[in-house]
Amino acid sequence: MSVFPYLVAAWILLMGLLGVVRSRHLVHTVVCVSVTQSSTYVLLLAVGYRKGATAPIFGQANPTGSPVVDPMVQAMALTDIVVSATVSALLLALVIQVAKRHGTVVPDELHALRG
Image 1 (cartoon, rainbow, N blue to C red):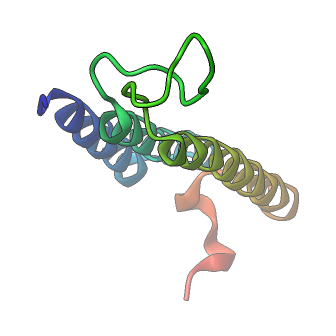
Image 2 (image 1 turned 30 degrees about the vertical axis):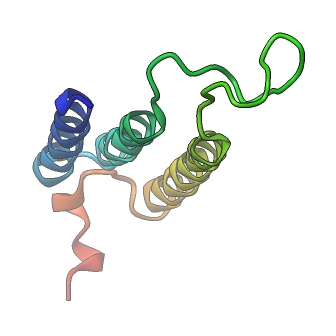
């Protein structure tokens, strides 16, 4: 198995984290968190990939005993996509509430939130 997909997943994760750290706008931070979460899709694809395998549907076209991909990894990837969309929607709703209450989405200008 190749190491390349794992390196791509690590690179996407690091770029997303770098964007979160360097962000000067809350919407940009939400987008960077989404990019960071998308690195898990690549990781799941790397884990579930099998060379020469087919979809896990058995019948006449795909007899029993032939190599198939793991359906659990596919289910985890779909669950990850749903969770990522939910987290992004929740974070964007929070950004909207911050913009309504404070009139800005720049973290440096949110004086009321400082301790």
